[in-house]
Amino acid sequence: MRIVVTGGSGKLGRTVVRTLRDEGHEVVNLDRTGARGTVVVTDLADYGQVIDAIAGIDEHGTGADAIVHLAAIPAPGLATDVETFRNNLLSTYHVLQAARRLGIRRIVTASSETVLGLPFDVPPPYIPVDEDVTSPESTYSLVKHLEEQLAIQLCRWDPELSISALRFSNVMDPDDYAAFPAFDADARLRKWNLWGYVDARDGAQAVSRALAVGAAGFERYVIAAADTVMSRSNTELVAEVFPGVEVRGDLGVNDTLLSIEKARRVLGYEPRHSWRDEVGE
View 1: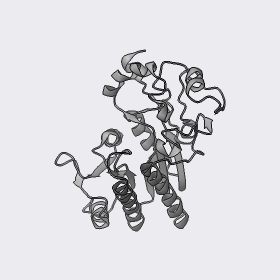
View 2: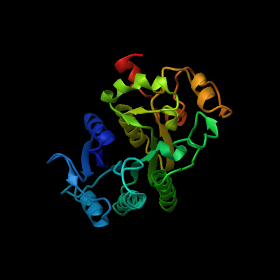
View 3: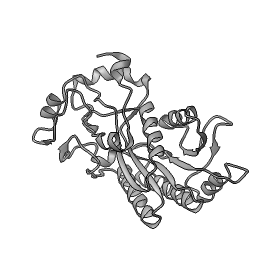
């Protein structure tokens, strides 16, 4: 496939671009920054630039087959609330609208674990949390929720459109894992996302699998590693930090508490990378 990736110069984006190219796809990266020759510099908050960049990727006019939309202010607190709202929501609307206008029907977009209620100052309704939980607690997560709602309505307008929203956990590279063993000293240090993370390589796997499935309509998926960032058991962690919260099923010893069962079932997603393989316990 010919795939447009927005934000392909970012932490997750670099791995997604490399993975898709390794799989034999032709990939074009739209971003504000990047090495010369590897990126089409595009301000996604400018609709004219967006549609021109996507439409102009192929001089023969055959166009793109799919879009992977990763570009955004990537976390709460990195910009003012107003700028986060303006930039992220407008950019997503521009990308989705340009795709529709250009007849691109297969889209994967980066949502976020923050939609689940992070930082869980208000405890989740149950553990593990899954896609049925939607409780944005910041402007950043509110925008991610609104982006999902936008995608739902666009798919209603166009029944042939396929949009997969991937609620990524905290994206990590192998270089980040040296810090993980210290988390055990304070269970509350990483409670803000139920001790979750996802290796960038597994994030890229999820993108690839969502593109391959490409079923019409909208779907959302939680994307996380198979395990937590902790060596301490889930039973101990939940009892200490979230007493009284309903526990659904067997938590396992260190299994992720951000449920990836839907992604496993529908996409065939299976995390291959764990911090434990990089640094041990």
